[in-house]
Length: 128
Image 1 (cartoon, rainbow, N blue to C red):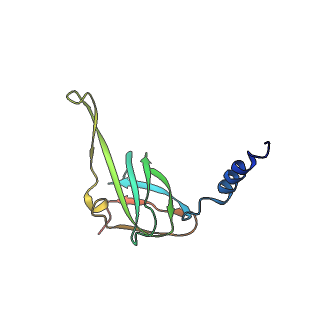
Image 2 (cartoon, rainbow, N blue to C red):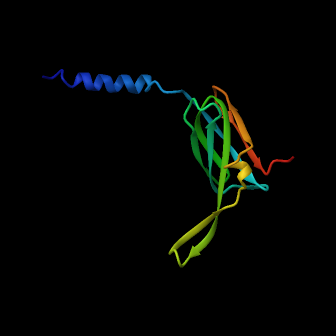
Image 3 (cartoon, one colour):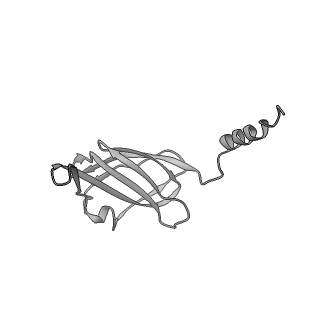
């Protein structure tokens, strides 16, 4: 009777130590600015160009982000929201996006994530 609990505990420990067999991810961190100012509140998405791995996303806070991303070439989307203040009709604070679609829905940004820690800063708009 006392050994019945060993199998579930052993299996749980094995999975915890070996992982779930998924694609390895690597730290990607950096800063995001818009017109020289930190993106205070936003999101950054890493979308695999080949579609073979899962996308990754991270919150941008005070111009900084950190994400766990699979290695490979990624399209990068940057979203930023400005606080418009309290809207009495909605009974809440409202926000509005301010970063143009060329950096999110129709992104021109890419990143080659390497199998190590990566630093990737995005200072937008890009100089053409």
